[in-house]
Length: 490
Image 1 (tube, rainbow, N blue to C red):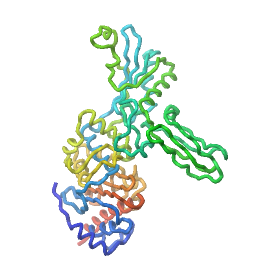
Image 2: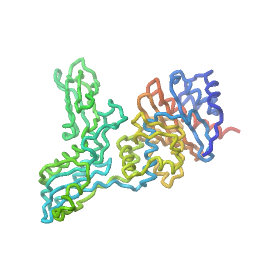
Image 3: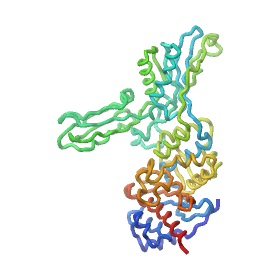
Image 4: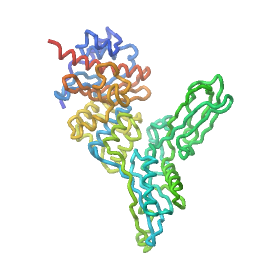
């Protein structure tokens, strides 16, 4: 892939240091310097509040392979959720848009008819819900089965350890939940806090009583006239399932929801299945979670007793097609979905780097440590993201990939950005945000039906994410305005 750099960035920044004008999207559109793309972007990067930020930017015209602007495009940055562009590109390339996860449900039956085990085998489906499980288990009654023996969940290790490079402070929350084989309800439970009577504890209600049992809540949040309108967040005692809630809440405070991870998702799935069976009047003798396959439940094959048992498929729960899963992954920036996709590839001995290299992404341009971007050990260059976008632009399933991205001013994590700017509805991209990190990469459609590839990464930001995002958005608007200006110049 060839590239043309129009002006040395060092010269651009030197010139821009003479003017540090702060641009809004509207002022950019009115600027007399709109036709000077390099100068306009450099002025944005030289704003006083951006002086400590490390920027990486690459803007490419894929039709000519020329770069309209580059700044540290080959430097490694922490990408945050821009990482999902790599993960979803690899998954779509390898699995295909029609791929569906299957969660098989089987019976181990004695030849005399008695069911010894009901076995549910997790395959990493991130879309599995209690409602889907309940519907699938109705097949037991349809077949006249009223006793299933022991309930067995096949999962990764029953107590999932945290990702080794995720931060401890993230682990109690929905965006850092464990990623196992039998994922149920996205491994998330909601706690809602509302004021109680003055002098009493605030009320805490849970969306799922089974999941709530996994958290031990030390609750000392009281309702007082002097209390806050927003309750303090619970604090986890690291390495335990204990949450501490302290403080005071005003009587008129609105409800507040906390979306918490489920520490032991395999156990949660088992107890949920048992609850469903009770509601359907189906008997069982207990249950367990194992991390081996269904054959381990049978007697040793060398034992003649093994001939007395047979495995019968009962049903299977199919996920949504991968095309829909990608939308949730990218538009909503769902970490669990992204991690499940990566685990699906690696479990099948499919190397993500090899897959990405097949669409033109140089393995030397990134360091992949997880699928979601939550790990700060991920490193990605703007060039790697441009190569990914470029490779997927001509991919046989290019439309599926593009449709999975958020649309400026309309959907997903871009719904509230670029509104009332010329970029609204014209940019399809992936955001990325964590403390001191912001990013945005995607496709910018232009009025002449051409498309530009854009990747902007900001690290070591010394201000709020809102201020950094505004600068990023201003750069994208500047690119759009530059094109409008350049195409109308005589």
